[in-house]
Length: 363
Ligand code: 0CJ
Ligand code: F3S
Image 1: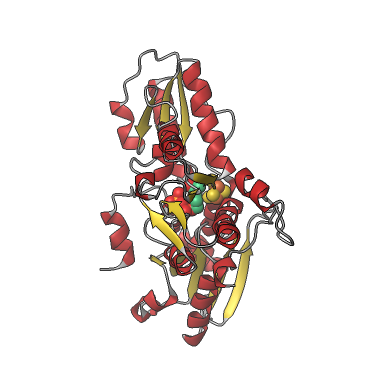
Image 2 (image 1 turned 90 degrees about the vertical axis):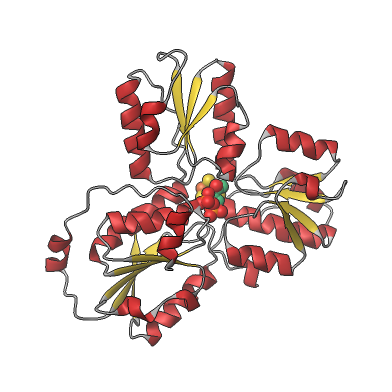
């Protein structure tokens, strides 16, 4: 079974949308020389960089084991590398011995998880991405004002569970445009939408448009909930896809933003697209008749894995690598506050780390 097929098994929505006119672009560019179009931005975002470094620094400071609730980010390589360094990943905090150091993942936690951690007297480090925390604050604020909150996102995803858990009596989850018709609200004049940070920009716009047909005074969130990293990575692949015979997305099958990149590539005209965790999953039959290969990676993917794919592509004759840059990113987040205070007295350990290209786990 191909990796693309596996993602469909996970129930992640694939909604066909209008494609860009592929013929126009093909006519403008000669297609007889093998080449790679390499997306920029790609790979680690500031929230992932911060979360991975938080686990590494917790291991340095407290020693192994350090417990992590859920995967710190949805990437197999990151999780396996941190496991080898002494991190123990658990599903719920009741699996953590009382009093232990425990990191909450980048996707965030509900107040119920925080309360249970306090009961167990866990020494917690909250690595929730600040952009997810912002959405939590929106949910709390609108619930206090007694709004019906429509949370656009994928049911079962940790981020959605965490955000919905801030105001369970006010939030209902809308998975896709097709679910709009079954939404019911108490007062159609007092409804707001918010969203998961890692959705398809286009599909979310479609969901919002359909919601507004039903609830014309539907209130928008105060700022975009789909984060800069998600929309920038989709922007780069939208530029590449119409020219690409094949798009390889490096990322794990449970990574929402990585799966979205594969879908967006297909929607914008790539002839084929596959998601791979590692270069050795690339199948040589994918290259039949292929001149231009697009390459990108999800926000949880270390750059080293992309470089492995590029080396493999070079072996197949795709040596000409042309960057396609559609945005520059310079967002940085400081480490979680619990860790900053713990590290304050450590010699030589900076309490602030810059966002990077995601090579940390292999250093
Ligand atoms: O929700 C987040 C804070 C995004 C983290 C980065 O990506 P990833 O792959 O861990 O998570 P998604 O499944 O949400 O894309
Ligand atoms: Fe945060 Fe967006 Fe990354 S929500 S963890 S910056 S994908």
